[in-house]
Length: 260
Image (cartoon, rainbow, N blue to C red):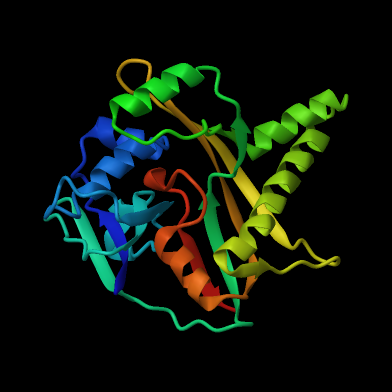
């Protein structure tokens, strides 16, 4: 059984620099913080999804909570509150789904397209496989992932388009079509309409995670909201549990749903 949790930071508990990093969108800092919820096996692979929001409930007696980060977490294990640091509210997560069910959704995703290219170091690749004791086989192609929006921006410039609003519209449309194209893989179909905006794509960001050496990580995220129809309940439930797209370790992939 999966678990859905809402996680809040206790006011005044994080060091100022750590809180500032979170507020500035440093998803690696957030990732490290949320690992504190699962202390049983620190060497375990990530088995949770998360999404960062900000506190909206402004209760009179909790004015100091204004603007603090809020996290939604879907996990295999029960997260444990960290006294004096993280407050956790959890419940079992087993939504009842069926074909044709309409849901509104919010999703923060990392939209990428995959490109397969021929290896330039085939002999080195084959030698490495022999050293590892792996069987001989034809070289596979390298997989590279490109940002859908940046790819579309490059295409627009190649087409001679210079108007910023036109380029931005093409980038948003490319992101939307990426999600629509992913629907069948994840068991849903995005509703479309000629009369109304059928899918909102907004809050596009590029992230750079600086690590020691030259192993910096770059990825992008964009938020989607709209209405979907379930076409495969089994696949769709799996997508709610395991996420959609890439960069799941950094706050992407968790879809939040509500009945229409």
